[in-house]
Length: 501
Length: 111
Image (cartoon, rainbow over all chains, first blue to last red; front, side, top):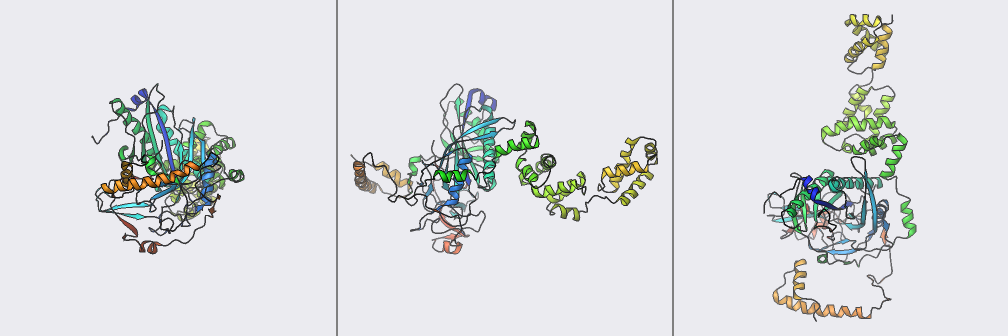
């Protein structure tokens, strides 16, 4: 077996095959407590500090379902246009592995709480694709393992493993798409756009902190290829460990190229779990898939069925906030954006940030301009997502307000933003600490103007002679002399007044 | 006819990570067969008007409020563990399985 898999050029893959995708996304709910016990649901706590007899699977303990988690699951289902099951249960998924001390995971199986929905995605060029949702079901997360005694930290060669069960029992919702077909060369982009749209939706619902880097949003990508002209799905692989939006796209693309090479080489694709390796951008074979029979699912005897009444469903429907696609339509109308402007805003990952900045009091045009230009450049140069920049919409709105009041020029405002990004505090603190307020004291400006005119007598003469355009050179000199802290418009007025014939 | 084969018992033992000897396989297959046959008799009396059920008590929606209750805490949680290290449960190395570092979720593997 070679270490580097053969890959087919992407264009050739598409000439011969049509990709079929299925995406499974696991999202950890940000409830206060775990799914079946009252232990706190908190990331990053001391190991095994949030555990109890129930989530440790101790004898005699019994689970009690978290009502908040059930409502979050139903709201997710409703936002995905799913039907809410009038009756459903949990099952035990039995497997032997120390990440669940009970030796089973309590999960919905064949009776999910939400079925048959859809999610509309916006692609980079502004076109829309609708992905069918098969189901959304409730389950619980597993504990975390560390392998010791091997140099790689991996299981191979490990002498023993260490377990932290703080995460065991954290409410998890698994959202599964219907097979996504007919997207051809855009399959990798569609996969990324789907996870992006789902993340934005979950964030709008405020049910999860959707941090892919912390594992609260995780994507498994099922990929298969069918020969062009065929309608029978090929054998699929499931790639796990895809924990960034970019990785989702890369993993799908890689699997398409790898599987195409396998098929064209006369081999068959093995149905298996594969792992995505971030550094190489490739997938490697993992464990053989256990069949679902091997999990010996059976209805969980310790939990009674969930039977949401229509009244309950209606009440939750009424709590849904403005959803991302509704918000897109609203801001486009309210702010008078063209399709291209809206697309740029969405592609920059700026829509929510701009809306929040506007909500904090900034005019839409200014808020939009800051996020899609200056702050996007800052995010690019730092190689982070726009939302990860250490400036809040409220703080940006304050900067915009200071500009509006004339307390800052655009140039000064950028330096204030730089200060905020550098962790120097809020805009007002930065203005004070860096002494960035506009010099609006006319006498101070007048002195600087006189100095500049004296230094460039020929220019002063030209202005007096009616060449108003020449004033730019004097304004520039004053701006330089005041460290950019003068209001250029006011300086120009003073220069012209001084040189009035 | 036997309802469970010796191979099935071996497979189940492997899934549960139980070491079962050759002679035990034979013994357990016979014993499980008796149990399964007995339980299967329930099916004989289940008529069309009796829906399958998983619970004897006709209750639904037993829920608790999403309010934090005290946990055991690390010390108490680990007190009864045979082995602990760095605030974590220490378990023997896991052989013949996947690398759980990359295993985000056991995930229902269905098509």
